[in-house]
Length: 68
Image (cartoon, rainbow, N blue to C red; front, top):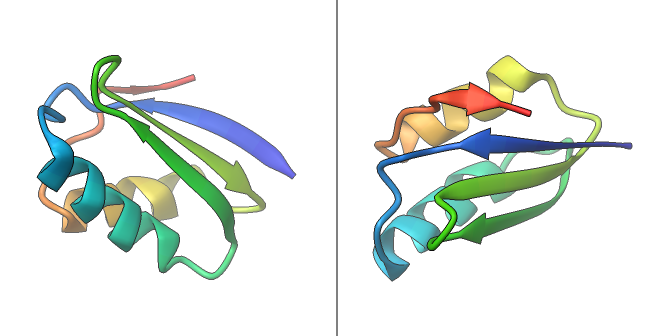
């Protein structure tokens, strides 16, 4: 299992958190997703391609600035 952190500067509230968790959490290969509103990050664990997670975050209405 891989864990990656995505920098998403548009995260600013609980609604953002819920929208991203819903979209990313729906991806089959995702084992867990944690959105940190203060740090503006999304941490995803699972055997999932970076671009699949990026697309899910985009579908929620947010842009990924970087991946660590």
